Image 1 (cartoon, rainbow over the protein chains, first blue to last red):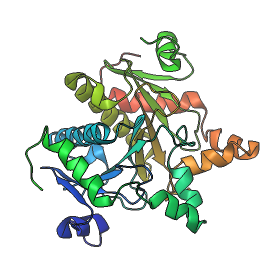
Image 2 (image 1 turned 90 degrees about the horizontal axis):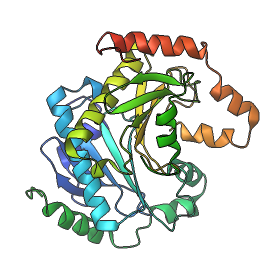
Image 3 (image 1 turned 45 degrees about the horizontal axis):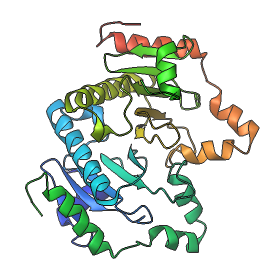
Length: 155
Length: 155
């Protein structure tokens, strides 16, 4: 655990309204931008800044969990594409953004960040991109249902 | 190999001016946006649209190669952060964008895509973001040198 790291802090609190699943090496949280229904952030339990700086066994397990989580999002919401992104520019603690892309998204050929950048200057756009088509609790329930078909429940 | 897939086509031709390294399960090409010096695109040899649809052993090997390539970029150019992204919105054949972020980039806290989106409407900006600080051949040579310290040369 690192001092002053927002993701270490989040892991120590596990906010109930965002928590989707606890894996052995990571924790999945429901993300803010639920226009991309099912969007999750998968946070490494170990504080590390880069994938290549993780111990090889821990890294392999963390990447397996990323794939399991992507598959669950895919199974629950049938997106036309998954986007898997590890940036960490603002919070350099390893985490994956797992964005399911909607077939009816007019911007589905673009990275999601173009819309989020626009939303920073446009409150209506921000509300549109953050509003879920289903209650957030229902999205979490669907993801947990998909995960429980392949994983031992830990949430 | 899939019909009409630009990346299957690229793998069959291996353009010499872009080729960085041939791994057993993927091939690394030098990307266009060399403002992010060392930026590579790592393309799966197998045509698949999603990571979770790859055979588990092939996937693990492909992800290991992604980590090896990230580490080589990191060793060669000492970025302040690596961004590892698998999107495939426009070309749904598995590939990783490996963007090293520069400490002197005024937009280093943002995803690279914001600048690329701006560049689509601004030729000067596009030229700035595509112009390498070193000749492209020199960038490739530095990456190969870093890779040859841990990998058996196949290029």
